[in-house]
Image 1 (cartoon, rainbow, N blue to C red):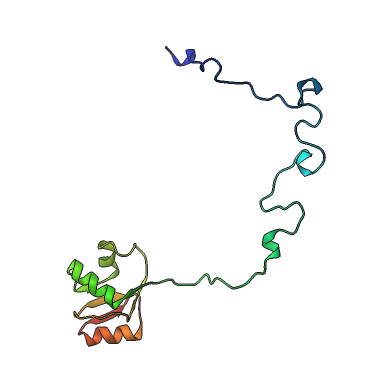
Image 2: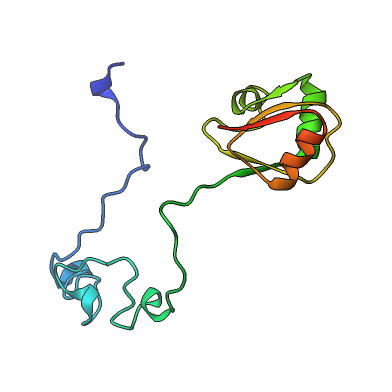
Length: 148
């Protein structure tokens, strides 16, 4: 058996519909396109969001708001979360790299320390942002915070 001898099983393939080959074929005349309208014309190409000349939905709806291209997104980590992370992984220093290595944050993600929860251990934290209450609680527990 060679590749040039292969052929499909008997009855498994059918020849395609022969369109626009005269009235006797049953598919002559309008050639299955129906009568009139844009879809019956040659050169018709459906446009995305085209609603047949009706005002499209994206043009009917009011446009509101603004998305700043300079927005900086932070992942919020509370003091309670940091305490749990330090206990679970035995960390005294928390940085974006240690959080990535522990599988808590993705690479190149900025995080902000928030003041919810309680910190009992003195931790050295390097974060991208910190709230005033979190900074106060970290320093009260004997730790230090630096902004990276």
